[in-house]
Each structure stands twice: as structure tokens, then as C-alpha cells.
Image (cartoon, rainbow, N blue to C red; front, side, top):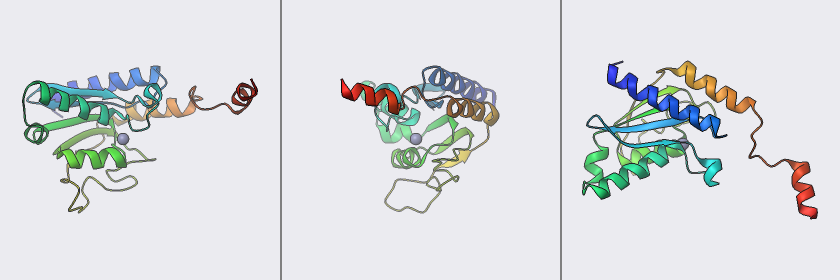
Length: 173
Ligand SMILES: [Zn+2]
């Protein structure tokens, strides 16, 4: 792994840690174009109460904003953008990455629950003629750190999950 890539993944891992500290699934990512970060994101599903706000979707929106602000063609920008993400993109995000035609994804650990780059489905390289372009993956980079954070998250009780007794009491008020 080249030095620049190491730096990007280090940064993505720090964002995953921030997600974990905020009660979110610990995933962090960066979108890098011409050695510049155009978009970054961490999972913010609980904070936004929106199940689609995965790190990758947050980062895609930031890149689109950047393109808009700098009068650049998103198709050209995404075609030369690399995604660095701590966890294998899920099925939804892998399909979004195909539609944006991002060519390369560097990721850490496998996503055994929802992975779209081989773990559950192989959206990244599937022959899907009407869903953008397949993309290349480099997997396993600092996977141990990424998976440790996921384990920590799933071991904790999710503070945002409905607690049946508490909720019932609230309903009677
Ligand atoms: Zn996702």
C-alpha cells in the first residue's frame, strides 16, 4: 500500500471511531480525487433517523456538492475518484457506487451482514447492464482495526434501539 493510501485509510478509521463514539455503526470513508479529499462521511443513520445515511452516501453527496460549487462534471470527477472505506460497502452503497461509476474502492474488513462486494452479494463486479459500471476492490486494508470497532458496536446495547418497557410506559402517558 502506498503512503498516500495509508494516510487516507488512517483518516477513514478515525472517522469510524468518531461514529462509534456517537453511537453509530463505525464506518468512515473518504473520496479522493487528484490527491484531494472531495467528500468524507461516517455513518449517521441514528443521528439523522434515516436508514440510508451510510458513510458512502454522505460522501457521495459531498462530492456532488463540490462538483456543483466548482462547476465540474460529476461524471468526469467520479470516474477518477477512489473511495477509501473502513468496511466493505453494503449492497445499497455498492449499487450507488456503480451508478456514480467510481472505478476503485479500497476497504478494510468484510461486511458479513450486508456486504455488496462479495460477502452477501457481489454487486461490485456483477454483470448488471443497467446499473452503472462494475468497480475494482482492494480489500483487507487494516481490516483488524475496522472489525474490532464493529464488534465493539454490536456488543454494546444500541442506545437508539427501542427499549420495550420504557416505550410502553411512554405510551401510557
Ligand atoms: Zn451502505
